[in-house]
Length: 249
Image 1 (tube, rainbow, N blue to C red):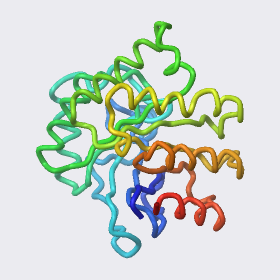
Image 2 (tube, helix red, strand yellow; image 1 turned 180 degrees about the vertical axis):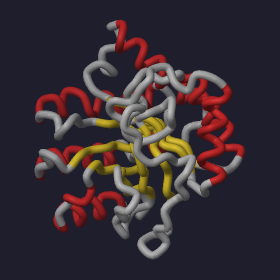
Image 3 (spheres, helix red, strand yellow; image 1 turned 45 degrees about the vertical axis):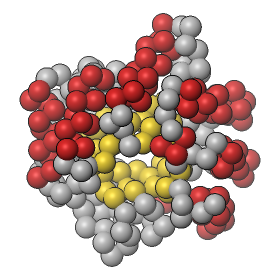
């Protein structure tokens, strides 16, 4: 396929779809301990786990996700030591890169520095954020901060993919989708991100023919880089056929 198809998994044992170009494993939400789970109840760590061998399924890239919903503490990475841990975990354990999921007010200058160092090892980098009403309200204080973050990421030239999360625990309402998805994508393009480096993301929870077609229409019309899916194991054969058709154009 000419555009990227990918997704996320919380389980290291879950295999990507055979059509995938990228699989992201995580979420490493305990940023101080660099583990999944929390500081009180930590899970696996990319510092101790090698990149899963998915060669029998696909020949794409396997990244680990730094951050995610409920990640903490805020303002990480904090210092050069935190940056080094991310780099060492990725390089020493064979991961193809790091997917930064900023849902806890990350330290963007140090995220960019980490990306820069990852690129020196030919590792991939991506940055994802919730691209909804806050992003589309740059005159508000939180909207201005979010837009400034994205502008910093884009202007750094260190980010391979800018990922727009356009869903919550399930797909947004049809009105929220029409009010925010297209305008947010165009905003990132206006900030200087090449459309083919922007990936639109959705979830299979609450997925309908209408919202799937709307997202695919944005990918096609704006010539975006691709589509990523949360809970991809719940995609139907019809969903996959429609996605593959658009991404192959």
